[in-house]
Image (tube, rainbow, N blue to C red; front, side, top):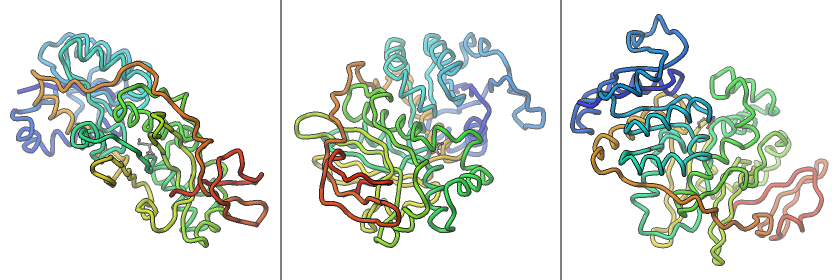
Length: 372
Ligand code: HSE
């Protein structure tokens, strides 16, 4: 039997407790032994929770308990989450997380720490929530040169853009609806500004190309300036506006990484990805296009990926997988130099350009790169 601890009893942490409990038999069958939830660490009180007896406030209890072999970090951010993860790994415990900010900003350090201690550090849920993406990328597709990745990896903004299209709302009203339904957080900045999508883009690049892509190097434009008239114009032109994460490897060996709203033509497989769903197309030089689709956020879908990692950590407890990338900077080209067609709007005039680099696009109130 292996004991585990959950750090942070929020949306994802409570989902992990539920999956471990309700699917106890499936988890045990996958892991090859029982997986028992021993502690939940949170500074808050949850007197009405069925998990109340497991709640503790002091992480040191987990850190110093030799019976705990896997720690699940679902706190988020890079404050205590970083401190606790470092301490858990240093104490020789496997660590699993859904925290994309932590992996994007401190992955090199934490993976090296895990390697030095002979334990696993897994983060499948950090990109695409419940969709299996990272393990296929570093495992099943590892015979390929990864040529490109493009996808919708932020559920909140995809929900907002879909709601604008379907209900004719401007962004502010669609955001309020997304908040009312629990898709968007009270502070939606990291979703609207594209920061969340950038972190996921970095983790994909790190894994695909083996060097570090720091979030501040990724060119980003969020969705705050997407107007209802752009959505309407895109629809009339037979497509839709989607916030895309883009990664390309050029023949010159340079990589290109950016996040921006794009015009997605109806024939693209990404055009049918609506509401809070996520999808990613990974193109390898041998396999061609592969597409992954599903729930990119939410308590149980995200917990499904987290618990999958817990199972894998238990299965590979004595022979860690040793995934990782170096701290060397990924060589980057400037995405502004890549030519494509663009839809541009001035006033109510909406038109399509020839293939142009960004600097050559005529001045416009709004411009959207066309996904080719
Ligand atoms: N805020 C994120 C999203 C949560 O909307 O996709 C999942 O990473």
